[in-house]
Image (cartoon, rainbow, N blue to C red; front, side, top):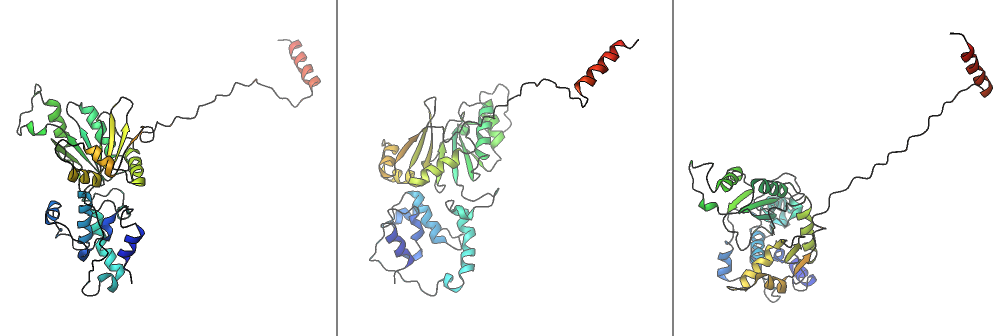
Length: 323
């Protein structure tokens, strides 16, 4: 009798058409090189349930390719917990997967929650940017329809010395002000250089700091790349600059395949695809109010219940009456 894993492999053409191939990787059913095991951090001992799925998810974000071997066999010793009490077994694993696998959107339906691994990293280069532009960009990123976001502000933060050196003549006055504004918000990170990939975060947005996100931008960009699993979505802005949404698994794969001087986007175009789109769909224009039509003034019509002749006679008597 075929297992559910074998059925999934068959249905997805050997996992080639699978959106999340790591789902089929359970504890005794995968093998990998030692260096890959250590590169992703190994199994997390703090994950009491679902540690194999969580580890496989990190492998996917690292860019590995899952290749099924239908001749290999695995045996589970003892009765699986889901066969003993399926309802409790599922409930026990959900908190661990919800915090560590952002792609499990079904487990993150509570609005306003904070999760261990965010869904999207928004990267903004703030070097030379004004305080106003940075504050607007950060506020827009954190107040979108996609709430599961972390913001990374890239700038020369390391050159700022600690201690009481705040001076109005400080050449780094603006940069120091930004650090003091955002240093204590756990949703905002200040770094000098972004990492090659945001793993284990599944998506990364990069765009100009002076082009704030629309509330629907991230949601629509993610929906777009999820339909065809595009590696990178590039939005061509009207001024010639670009904004982009990167799929971490595609970036991870490109990092594994490229060497010094290689173009990462060229590799992603070959493995996952790079798509260019205009901005209208992702930065929708503000809704225009319906025009207000003011009706033309109407002539005043006096209505009397008296017959016309009686009304005229009354007016004549009023005119002839002595003062």
